[in-house]
Length: 107
Image: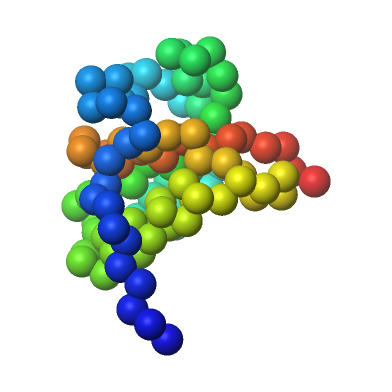
């Protein structure tokens, strides 16, 4: 299997001056967590929309985890499908890293 390396560094779709901060969200409910991230249902005050907010602590990431995160972001940026949650934006220059996703109800 080839070694896939993302071509970009962590950073958002929005210009740096407009990238969301944790203070731009009202956390409503914890949806889940993993080894280095927690996902919340959150209200994004700027766009007045409910999103799934993935909050990633940089301090918990080793180099391999950073590579995996970059790959995840590249994949999410490129996928548009009705059955896959869409990434709305992300912020990687701050701690924590924030990934904003569509918030879908369970089936």
